[in-house]
Length: 237
Image (cartoon, rainbow, N blue to C red):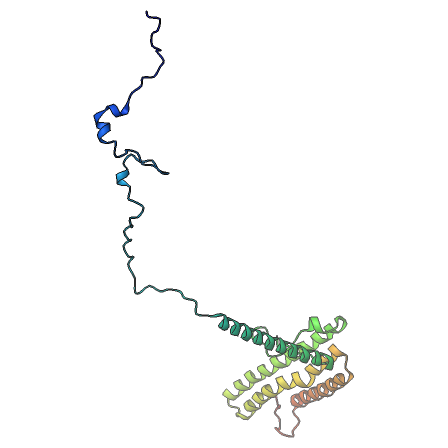
């Protein structure tokens, strides 16, 4: 073995230009520079070349486009209109409250019709408006009014039967008049004054009640006795 043998770990020096193919292509590099690595720079378009435009998108004539029509001026006008309406409502509310306060100071009670429940025609609330120690008496008076209504209805039925059996129509018309005038008359003339007297403890209302209640009792006695004044031998009722 020679003393100056070559180093086995030494890399072999190869001249790239010794290959004829490399010498022929030495005028054009196989590697593209820049930020991107490419093996064929001929496939990359130059920087000065223009890209082909994209094809136009189809246009639909029937499509709707939302375009805001309200400008800032229109919005301000609407805002002023809403503020005016709000001020008007506030004014009406204050006026209504003023009237309610005036009615309350005058002692006027606004009553809501609540009886009978299926067809309210009158205001009637003994449990909440009449003092507890007077409620029993008021219920008795209310029962008396309902008894009057039932008696006048039964009177119509009885007189109608008598008319069918041969009696004249005069007493039938009288029974109708009694019912039409007796029911609302009894409520307005003596029951309602008693209800208000119980609720407000008014001496005037009590006096009104006693006057017309005594007149009503007197008429009922006169109609039941049937003195020979108008219809001889027959009752007015």
